[in-house]
Image 1 (cartoon, rainbow, N blue to C red):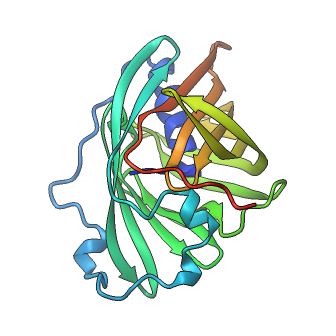
Image 2: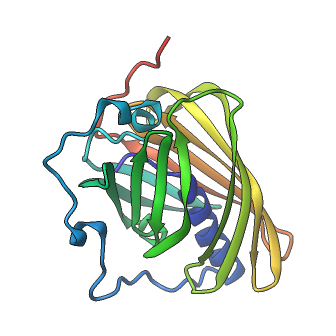
Length: 248
């Protein structure tokens, strides 16, 4: 699947912070025996997705293809490889939904359900948790300087309650080169605080999206409880789609 949402920045931060604060000890991901998804509720796969919902946010999320991308995953000096794949679930109440499944080095970030609305692309559930309020990942119209707020309560990989408050911002577009390919990207930054077990940590991150591909690169920086600065990074190794030229 070719997109990492703003929830993924938070999810990546949760995993990275938990891993470092516990000396790398994070419980393995397990799914309930009878996990319920929107697919169990009978989404409509026959109705075409309206053109009005195939907006800029939709394109930069890479939602037009269901093939798998491969990423390099780094937590400080530790490097792994992981895959991410999209499945179109169908229309739910007139809105298209997609499911993100991740493997190997990305598995700790969990499964995610994405919903496309007229004003943008939202995460409605992630890590087998339904969000208290759907989280805007990308607005329908990409405008440099636009900001929006995040305030969520969720659980980290070890089951601890976490509260996150952050501000997202669309930065100036950039060209970046990964795996020998150069992409025209929009850049979404996130800066905020993560509070768990009575301790608050500063977190900031950036995601680079290419139209037709989705996420090309994601970086999360945070300060551990002992004051150590850490970096978690996901970078495209092999894309299954073709990047589109940005609109003039």
